[in-house]
Every structure is written in C-alpha cells, then in structure tokens.
Image (cartoon, rainbow, N blue to C red):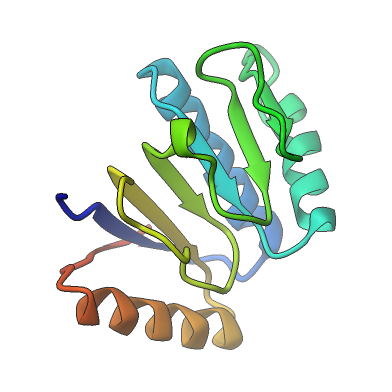
Length: 144
C-alpha cells in the first residue's frame, strides 16, 4: 500500500483558534474536492470547538460535518471530527489537531499536521515529524 503524503503547516500565530481556523479552511477545500475527511482531535472538547467553528468560520460557507461517535454520516463526504482512528470509509484526508500521530496511516492519502508557534506544539510536532520519517515518509513543511 502506498504511503500517505504528509504536510506540516507551521502557522505564525500562537493560538489554538488560529490552528482551528486553518483546519476549517483545509476541511472546506477537501469537502469541495469531494474528499472524505477526518479531523483528529485530542479531546471531545476540542472536537466540539471544531464542530462549532465549522458552522461559523465563514459567513457564506457551508461544510457538512459531524462529531464521530461510531456511526457514519449519511451524506457521502461529510467532514467528521473525533478522537479515535478514522473509520475505514473516511480514510482519504486526515487533518491532525491532536498532539499524537494517527495510529494507523495505511489507507490514508494525505495527512495535514497543523502546528503553531507554541513551544509545546512545536515539540510534539517534531516528534510526529520524526515518527513519519521512521515510517519512510518524507513530510513537506510549509511556513504560513
């Protein structure tokens, strides 16, 4: 199976809101392209923040989304948000807002890692970057 493409985005801001807003833009783009997208969060609270933000981040934008709790949405490319592994049919695009590496990356096409200027975020990001390298993946880095 081919390895996913991994992109690290390093945001200049130092805020969780900035990372979440950027995740919304990526999710919207993935939705428009018809990709099944999963947003991985550290906690249910973070998933709920993303759920709210996807309704409000842009006035004229509608991105169907749901918090994933074991049942799949009926609309084909609804963005799903959760703390566990993405379910098999939703393994195209993963937007990682958590501090962990996704456990299983086989089957994913692309992974977006979002970091900000916070030192603990950057340290967790470096560990994830090295983890991908040990898996034979050469991540791309984009400074925003």
